[in-house]
Image (tube, rainbow, N blue to C red; front, side):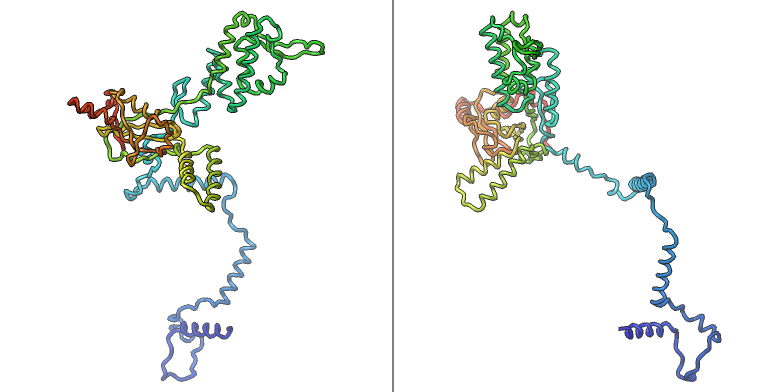
Length: 442
């Protein structure tokens, strides 16, 4: 191999030696160095051999080891300056004139949001009437309840008990226990032992003290926190003692008890976002926001469990009933539904619903916009499926999630009666004030 490389080097040296001599020249005649300056000038300079290049690289490496290399910016300030210079250079290049296509900054988010069928899912606080996003509703309702203490502390404390505490079974147990305390006072108004409640009592601690809002309720209906000595024992303990003003009005305690027992959690109402659109070829096109598909932590766990069950079912035969049950379960993963109703004149009525709301709610939503809302009508889904109001099925059970286009028509018997009387149903079925706010579907 060494001989092979030596032959290649000799060949390269021979080719770079310049033009050869004529055959008529004397053989073996050799020009000494320095006697043919013109030939030396015409010959190109030979490059360094491989051995020379390797030696030069080694020498350069030794020099670099002796001399410190120029280091880049390592301190925080120098790094920031370098980044600032690069950002300024990029900004300058972006503002510099270029082809027309480079000046257009794409904004995909804005473009998508402008074509959404609905901007999102919104709620209305029943206490303030404010429209809220889903991530705002819980905090806003809590703040509204707390601000209500200044005007009606009894109602505010009842709302706090039922709303702030999420465990419904524990709330029911605590509320029933409070009602029992108030019943004893009402049934035995002269007995002193029923006029006070020991705070360190085991039942009070386990059922009432653990709930938010219970102490505010006792104080709002007339109880006062008092430290009393314990008979036959040293020391004292805290009690709730009913005040004289509250004892003089036992009927008020009974009213407060009924309010407490009949109360429900304060929940934000779903904003229907009712809209009326002109006839459009895009009636069946739905561009839904992420609110219709985002899942809570509980829903994510449920989906994981359902997927595990699905894997297990793949290895077993399923009956028709099992497959139908699985399809219904798949539909339950949607929380909301966006529905459009095509009216006889082609106009579209749109609204947002919970996926588990029943058909009567949908029929009532449509009935509220009709000019003649007392006339019976029909709604049909895609494929001609007739929706029956009396069946009270959930929207997801009817396959109307996450979105669906329905068709409105008057009841067939009503149409026959009208035509028999020589009249035709009006083309427009909406109330006039709704037509004034009609929009273009885009």
